[in-house]
Image (cartoon, rainbow, N blue to C red; front, side):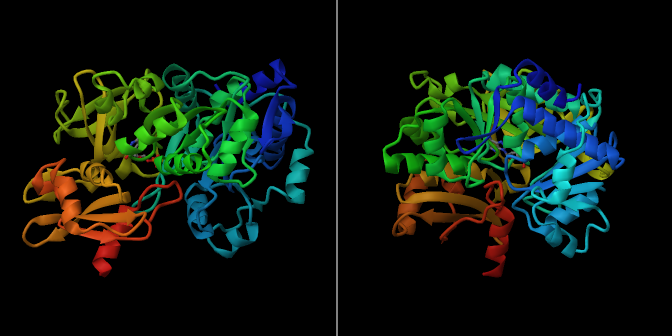
Length: 504
Ligand code: AMP
């Protein structure tokens, strides 16, 4: 089924239901949202664009986003959402790799100036071209799609190397959306999905289930993540749900603490996409209350590998609470999750190995990349490149990306456990741990630390580590930095940290 069918149905059932908001300002009801999507679809069709074609959206979050996204799907074409914060050069690489037939971009001139998009038409959302597209007689119904039709070409955030385009089918998106209802949260028409993280990524993927349920879609006026604005919007709009990377949660908590806010109006904060440290989620719970659900996923299995439920996170009296809080939860209803050894055989509970997932949410494959497909799709399973272990009760503990594992003196050290330990020092506000080559040890552990105040001494940091983890895991070097390099999704760029060390 075409995911845009959900928009058509909601518009038929509840045409006057409020749909698109800029801040607290209503911009369109569901009838108008669907009309815009149908008009974009008709205009694309008139340009000869339809099933099998790809159309890129290189825009920051805006109220124009969802009508364009649904318009592309409505036409039966594949959407290629590109993070609006990328450099035009990076976006142009994606556009050209995807052979997009058309691009919606904020600054078409900048795209053309890259010289990398050839003659691909580029249209700005506030242009006469868009006005003409929106004035086209809408296509009455979304073009039919089957489960296997490509709907969303998801370019991985590329913390190393070039991004790869994961082909997500209509079936993948529907499975992901229904899994949200089963394992993350219920959604009602009275809810509001707030887009504070890039709509080209997780936050945007969650739009479909909110469309299906006729909920509101809110883009903050700032267009991005301003914690004070989010707290105020939640108070005004009520029942607000949002996806947030752990770094965003941390900033939201700090802002709430500073203004004495308790998260009133926030229904659910779904966090994931990077490690959430136990100390941070405990503080978040204390300040904002039981509003959190964690998900673990990747572009290749969008948002849907495991989930740690609101009940698990909030159940402070459970004997396993802290262990569970440190995990990424249990397999999603639609997901089979295994931990494999180097030969690909399943490992028993407790043993760390590569996490593999199978299910209807797993991508069809990477676009035009047989080599990467052969490595990551094996025997019907997606190899995630993440290392972890399953507990006997089914909770998955994520250790690290396989490539971030440090092997020092022959022992495996997972940066995450060293990071968790250092974060227990009150002066440490952020930390990222990497391995660096060393003639004696093979690799040694180096910790990059951001402090709120004066940096603590090495002996103090050593003590906090040896009080919590094995002595051999203790960093051999501490590097104090003002901030950690992060990509546009808030993920720490360990490759940049490695380069920083090499430069020194
Ligand atoms: P992306 O495809 O850009 O969304 O990145 C996916 C990767 O982010 C995963 O393979 C994990 O390494 C990491 N990730 C996703 N969710 C979590 C989570 N809840 N905790 C820790 N890391 C996560």
